[in-house]
Image 1 (cartoon, rainbow, N blue to C red):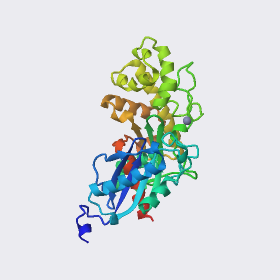
Image 2: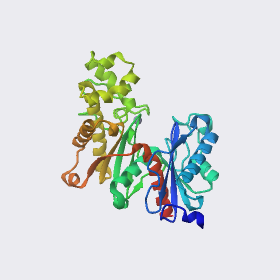
Image 3: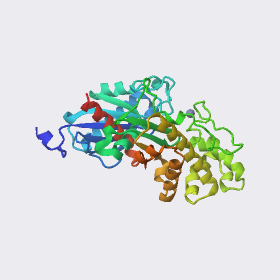
Image 4: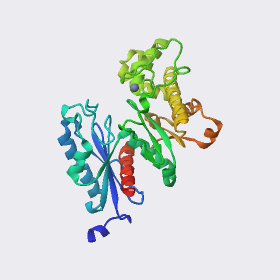
Length: 347
Ligand SMILES: [Zn+2]
């Protein structure tokens, strides 16, 4: 009883959120009143490249460490939310073909959710990292109204991740593959220049959102084309992977080539949001990724360009919000915690 009274939260119980990444795990604690007990990144090495056994050890360590750090007794924890990069099933089984972060054969088809549940002896709820970030962004934007609102989030990184949230919950789909917004094919008219090759995605599709609006899309498709239009540009002398990473700093200085590339990305996301407008007509269109950390003027220009290229009806224009996803480095752990909290409350 003494132990329970020492807890600094008035809530009677908590959930833990664990975000599993390629190099680190990040952990958080969310109490039953919806308050996070952790304000900063709390990380430990994920060791995913050492295989499932080491990775589960590290997740268990992250779990116990965050309880110690917040002086939360184990007995108060009702559930754990876990997110990892995909592809994985809705139940947390890593793809049978493996995945970028889970390339060892021992990971193929590995049930990471059940393994962690068995290890820590508490219910574990799973979602992929992009869905977790989308869920956190939704709850952060809408607060107390989150459970009556809907949103679509596009997060631009190495690929294009995202998620669809309806009534405060992630739409996961029959196979766990809903919200794969990067692989939605979009109309390219008005996005590509005359004579520009149709962009190809690593998934095998051409002209999907990720083939344009991702770092991979810049490197593979957009930059090689735009360098033919600006042959004297300083980035023409750099290897493509390095040039692609430098592009945002050029855009912040209003470099014409860089702005042309990011304008195509913003148009592609606008086309995606136009599809969303006709599909689920969400309350909010959320945008995240590296662009959120960019200089405010460029960031605002990018968001405005997305909005200008999202064709909404007048009724939708007055009903919908466009916003940037904040706290992206903590969004995975926090979104996983939100999913666990809801699962307990609706258990
Ligand atoms: Zn694709």
